[in-house]
Image 1 (cartoon, rainbow, N blue to C red):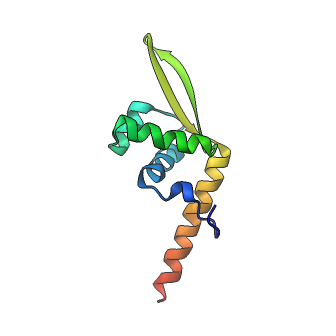
Image 2: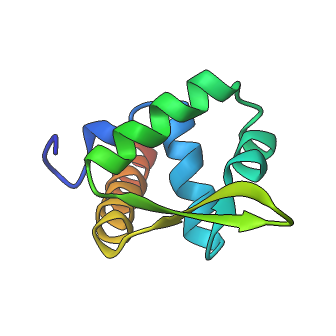
Length: 99
């Protein structure tokens, strides 16, 4: 946490995108996230792991048509931290409008 509601985990464009997409979808699998964010496998995987480490997202592994599938979802801690971050961004924008 950086203070004023900002969180360092969301400074990166890909992580911000992951949280944005997962906040409006109950669950998304790796390939769907990759398509939404236009990310490479390695890049996406590293950012997902960073968000998992913060306990902002979790994953479920299952088989779909006999193929392994990993679906990601946002945790309550992730929802709270992301909402605080977005609120801090909105407040920053509002404060700059009067300048």
